[in-house]
Image (cartoon, rainbow, N blue to C red):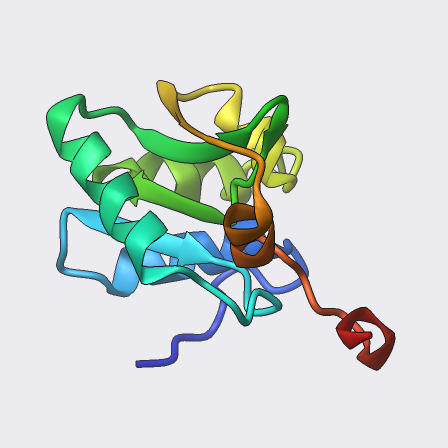
Length: 127
């Protein structure tokens, strides 16, 4: 199902808000539309890790690099996120994350994980 942003021009955070609002599930897996090589194994392992120790958001981390657009968000955050965006707060996902209980899902730096988090924004990125 596709949903339109309720806060146009507010970037990926607005997309997360719209998806949370439309979802009836307790959790939402969020990923960037420019990430064509998602790994089912990584996503499944990430969800399993979250079930063991819940948090507001579970973000994968490779060394010191995090990927908030390959994360699992608690949908009950929706009213808080909606208020945050309505108040005109910083629309950067990382700015919003500073206000939440975030857990990190540590992954090794290897070819498999790097490929899963690759962003393709232009034809040159495929080379």
